[in-house]
Length: 162
Image (cartoon, rainbow, N blue to C red):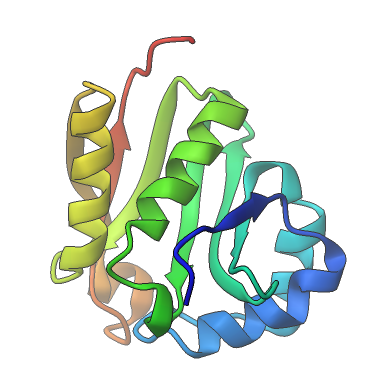
């Protein structure tokens, strides 16, 4: 696989490929294909898709701006194919989003054991010289009825305007 990736906003036509990508990336929570179609249409401006030289989807980040804080980008999911892992694709996608959207803050939620996600967001905070803070957010028992691990709210920023 050529390591040169093509980045762009997702389109409605990418929805089913995103659905399949997320299915192939456990432990990511799968959503309905309808949800992924909405991510690729309604939230396209705050999401990013990455393709290899053969135009195959190899990465996707879904995000949205918070309704009560439009300068905050919430990163919903980060997915990278097994073949594209280890090539800093998630970091590249997130940097493209930061450049395009120029948020003041980035929020996401991460389970305690998801070391790849912690590593990604710590690397982004370090690269952009912004603080990273976390606090309990979704509790396993209270919010997920014990069916999902607790998630920490991770806050990066403030980012400096370019």
